[in-house]
View 1 (spheres, rainbow, N blue to C red):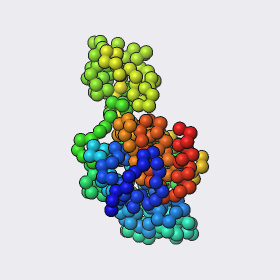
View 2 (cartoon, rainbow, N blue to C red):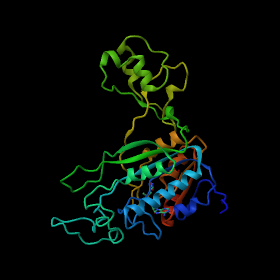
View 3 (cartoon, protein in one colour):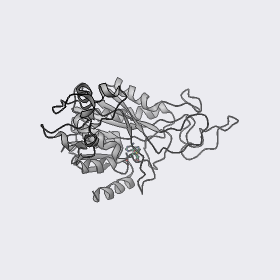
View 4 (spheres, rainbow, N blue to C red):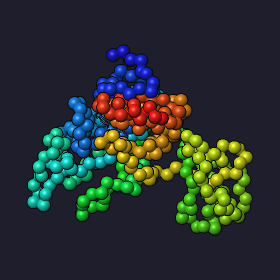
Length: 339
Ligand SMILES: C[S@@+](CC[C@H](N)C(=O)[O-])C[C@H]1O[C@@H](n2cnc3c(N)ncnc32)[C@H](O)[C@@H]1O
């Protein structure tokens, strides 16, 4: 198949795998995406992923898409996948079992997915979708670099009494090679006291260096003096990088900053017009800033209402999207029109 000339800043309407197969090898810098959940939503379009009869079939389709993404990514590129889990028996109706252990009546999603009956899962089992996918991609050649916890302070309420309310999803970071582009300095976070003994450690050069990952030149001796109140703030943000402006000048005193941690607290934000879960712009800002250089290309093979495109555009990156449902593409284009 001859590769097609891909237009930048465009969302292609079609199946993710078939469309990716037309893209040139090593033609995008970074991939950021949230694939359809398993057995939770109906996107009302033929060929959609997420309503396969078994988790195994769903995972195979997702893995095929993300392995094709690997071919399309530059050698130094990264891929960030936001993915949540599903419960066997949570296929909106059909899988849910009542007190007598009987499956409840089918709903539109349940008509397609019968996770309660298949693949050896018992009703109520957590399927383990995120890790199953991560291991499959690692086996396919991806470097599985990190599991980041997306902590949702405003999770969907759940009427359950025998487990905790689910308040997280995963953001998996994959790379194509062992060495790759990762702008860690651009996503530093404010260093807070981390529990080490106050006087001894809080202001020590080791702490600051460790925390910021950078040399500190203007650090005076003696613990707390190096944490005057006026330096504790970390409010100054440098436009679209999120990097504290103070760090750009070489002789400017360093504010306490540290390497970004692997738990990210970001509230979910519904987007008017989309009846499905869009991921919050603040969640993927970090991925794009760290994973794609200015002027580079971010690909999202499951573009939905266009959040990746909107954030990429705001940050001075290009985007390429794929989406099966043309109504969502129209929605995304409307959003992009006002960026
Ligand atoms: C979780 S949503 C993505 C939401 C997106 N991150 C946003 O913020 O709007 C998953 C999307 O994948 C799309 N989709 C499902 N199957 C697909 C396929 N085979 N090829 C391309 N897109 C597909 C759905 O229509 C849906 O819009």
